[in-house]
Length: 48
View (tube, rainbow, N blue to C red):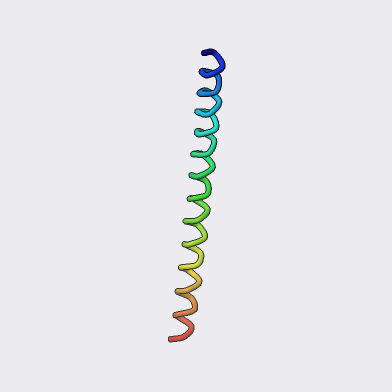
């Protein structure tokens, strides 16, 4: 039973770390998309 509880705690910690990593990845994605959007606007402005 103790081994099972330890495994649950281990998995909960791994889950927490993965959620944190996912949040960072989403922030990076949003920053990249924002940068791409800005570059596209510059290109469109240059083409007009």
